Length: 263
Ligand SMILES: [Zn+2]
Image 1 (tube, rainbow, N blue to C red):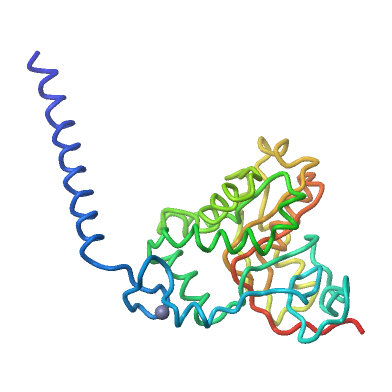
Image 2: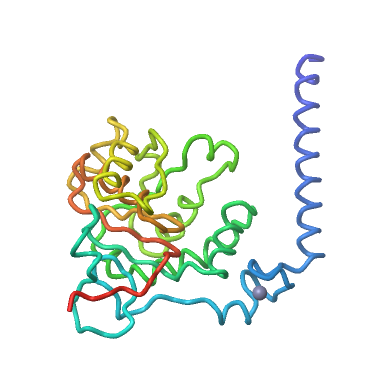
């Protein structure tokens, strides 16, 4: 009997300590109003203050139907950018919610490093809206994996957090931990086309025991930011090698120089 008591008391103490901790956290949340993720001013509700919100740059048509890069003028339906024609990516189509700028960078950093997971529902909703046509045709969502070292220090995958919101919004099933990063990739900027291909070659892999979850399916890759495109290119290649029928890409924010059209 004394033995069971010895085991039971620490467990009860642990529970009490945990409850006290969450009570303190809840009390702090009540006492401190949430801050704008970009300018750190106190804000009503969550996320961004009205001034930062108005500076966000949502990506809408006209854009390149392949890469999702906005055009400066409307060339007519279905026209692709010169980038898409000269150097087509392994994935089929990409869509992003917003341009990568000062405000969207602050949101991405707050989610990634600031433990502001409460931003994920808002950001995920914007991605779902930007990608609604792609989601209507998709079978599975696959988040871009972290390198294991980064995953260890950050504890969660922000792309996974966004993909969970998109799953709830769209009903497209999230398939997590199917893709693995087997070696790091360099920045693609400044590399020649063959160098870019070898940079992402073999950087990602679908775990062999999970290939059946990818084979013949229309997959959407989810990531927070697209800069050079090296990461999604490497992931798309791995998914296609594993037998995916189609790979599209959804991102929160992309670097978006105005796309030149082919005409
Ligand atoms: Zn603000």
